Image: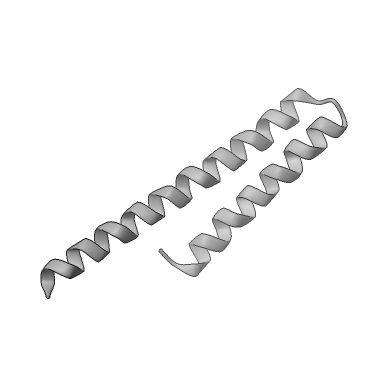
Length: 64
């Protein structure tokens, strides 16, 4: 899991929070939903990267 991946996921999460906030402020449920979707997508990607990193750690432990 690279730093650029982490930054990309965090940026997507922040973009989602901004969209959700704008949707709430303007009473726009579509925009609010898009924001929640962006946040969920960022969370799934981040979790996938963490699992991938954990699997690599286990693999490396067996190499030793």
